Image 1 (cartoon, helix red, strand yellow):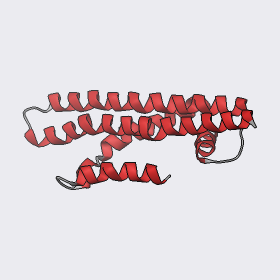
Image 2 (cartoon, helix red, strand yellow):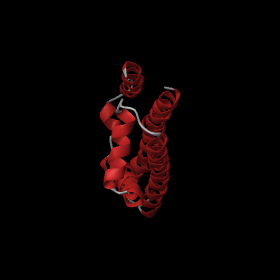
Image 3 (tube, one colour):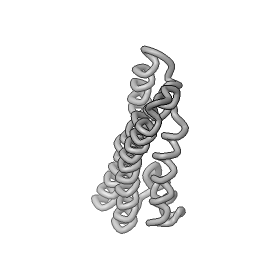
Length: 146
């Protein structure tokens, strides 16, 4: 866990070295990436199925191979959906930019959506869901070797 915190800390230091880390927060991008990721996954697996997979990924109790496989499928879906939502955010941002080229005040917020949505999607997919999937796989391997 300490290395996870240190790793994220490196991103925060990098973000704040040339300005405010708050510049990297964009509410529309958060909504575009996070809401569809969890809502569509809940449509596939039920809200309790998604929550159970997240709890299993951070837990320490033994799990059966069948539970692990189901939870890995949920993690893979979350990972794919977060990446896809980030890409969709790029497209939404570009469309918004191109629709309002005559109004320079609207270009910046649209560009923020186009740039920050994939950042959120990739960070969620690769720095949250992928490690969670590896934790589930690792716990399954230890359980079957015991």
